Length: 451
Image 1 (cartoon, rainbow, N blue to C red):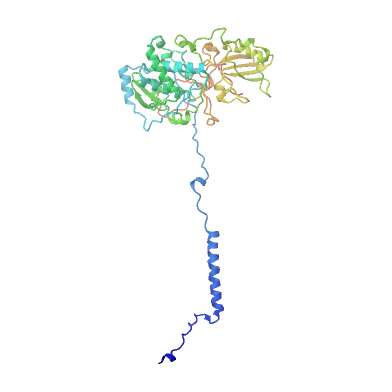
Image 2 (cartoon, rainbow, N blue to C red; image 1 turned 90 degrees about the vertical axis):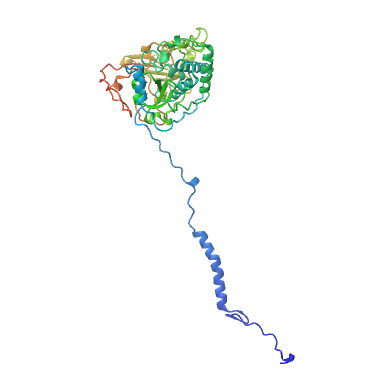
């Protein structure tokens, strides 16, 4: 074939479905359908995809279930010992196993209040540490922790000196034996006192002795108190054994009471510390009965027969009864209730059990019933005669003890309507059965909680 016979380049054959003038209608339809699907499918996935599960932070917070105690705080019994020789006591104590599980440390305690009250707290705590443990830093720190644990527990007074000298006016009622066995007559060196006060200051400034945990009781290993079998034995520190209550009352949530911030003068310490000496007559004591008319308390708004009063710290405690009678004037029925600090004084009625337990003074007049009596909180006013002391009530935990019955402070005489009731048994109690209580007349120095 010659060059002149070479054919021209052939045009490309049309694609299937296409003619020489462009895509066929069928192909155009298929392409349009494909494009539409490319838009519709992602849109459907976006609008119909299930929502992701909520993250932990988005989930509603589950409320914590608060396990509440089913009984009031167990009573703190007078210090009575089993009749054993020291050797027998040590053998009996050694036979009791230590409680299983870790020992949980207490929260730090930080002292507050006026300078005089802080000084009295330091005096009381250093005295307890030195007279109970001797000049031994390890033992002194353990004793201090027990005192501070008690201050925050509802079964005990809510002041340092109140805890240490509770029951000191009774031979077997004192909770710390040095307060009633004559030990205060023993003298320690100035260096020993300085060391004790430094350790006490550290404890009051937040230093925690983790060794004894939440312990509220202790005794030497050569005696066996009747109460020891009912408590959890935690640890031995030197010659002392430390215990906590069994059950809920020995756990951290039970130690939630607020420190009072006021410390009573302790006459037994007056020879050792100036802060415990009685005030000079012309120094700070004021005859409450002689105050001006403008200083007389006024009744609660809406209830002209009830007075809720914050006491002036200068008032002579012995004259508070006269102040109450001046305030009540000629009322046939009158309740006069007073506290040592504004923070403790309730503003309205009804008065809570917690407020009643911290009351410093009360006066009740009921002319129709022939009743007219003033009562003092003798933990705060130890110079008052014992027959004028109110029976202190155990303070329930704030927000946790609604509906719980109130009990009297352990070691003190209990009201007879309570004495006739059976005290709920504690886990692990091994005691001789108590004789049935004798019937007596109901005492009239019980603060009326029905306010």
